[in-house]
Length: 56
Image (cartoon, rainbow, N blue to C red; front, side, top):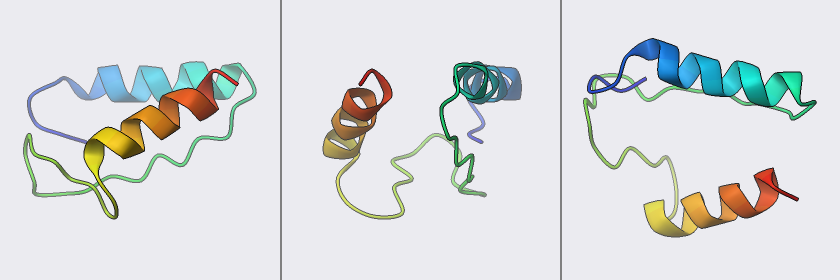
């Protein structure tokens, strides 16, 4: 969870996706505040890949 948005935003997104039957790995990166907190790869590429997979 990041510090610039209420936790409910991230939690509601995860729950909505789960309710649509999507598998959600809600792992958090702690102590980073609002930052590019990727565990691997490039943030832009990761986001595009995530959106593409989510709407498939």
